[in-house]
Length: 413
Image 1 (tube, one colour):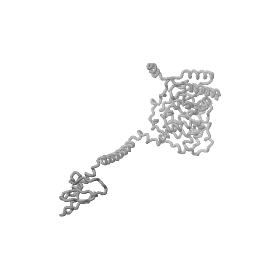
Image 2 (cartoon, rainbow, N blue to C red):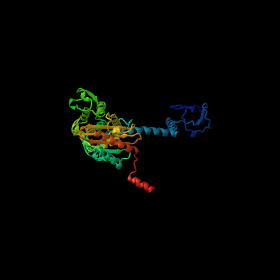
Image 3 (cartoon, rainbow, N blue to C red):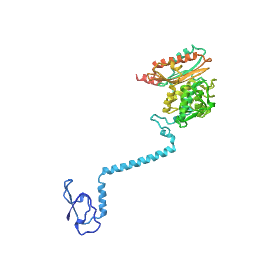
Image 4 (spheres, one colour):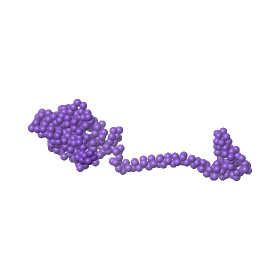
């Protein structure tokens, strides 16, 4: 046996035979050493005892591999990292394949939101059966009696009204299913259809629409005074349709959405029983129709985000809040209340429908249409009075528990 003095850094063993015992430089595991244990100091040399027998290069390689695997924690970490990378790759591939196969199942494929919020094209899967049910709970009979008493003071008028408390589902129905000439309240379902197509990618808000001569409608609005051929963004046209009730803008939107027939089919798919377009605007003859319940139904679905995405819902209601005609429903509200609404006014019918947001946080839908003798001004007074009575009722009204809940409460006492 001979002593070999070497530094801790490994040396490559010679591949040629040597007669000198010092030529055998292969390192071995500590458990095979016959040397005395030495303190671990950085400046100290390591002295080991090895046999004079030559160690092969292959064995040296195995020894180095064992030393590399001597730290189990590092090995485990390495394997975990490799598995993570492999998992991420597999997930990315699977996600891409599934999106190609079934793209409509992934909301992110339909909307760039939800920095806002998005509802992934739920509106496109609506059927008449699923959309025809308005979530109603209990009719508010005391309020109904007050409204009927007020209407009795105007015997020449034929009102229809529908109110829904959006928090409780309690409602009032005063001939709300009756069909009426829609006047400009028909622009509410048209606006909803517009934003539905925006959500579906069929219409861009910034696309340019050309005003054609055959689309110019008289009555309300200022586009009728523009030269045919002028272009406007789709969003600007939609805003004019509601804010200043522009009839030319309405006709342009109807054409962009596929025409009257396509829109009427969509209204039926939404479960609307009385709403239909029969003529372009201004429709002074009153052939376009709707009902107070249909309008309330539409607004309730929009409020729940069922017909359009929540992002489009907020934009839609924001436009309706800008309605310039504030002579009907808004006149019955208190100062700090807000309303998103649309009015309608032709000789035979006056109406207004919208969502009221009270300072207390309570919210309700109001939808009123009044059939009248030609331009009878009492219709305006009646709508204002109905709005005022309803607002005061909802202001102080506290919804009671449903019947099942009442029974449960009694059993617990």
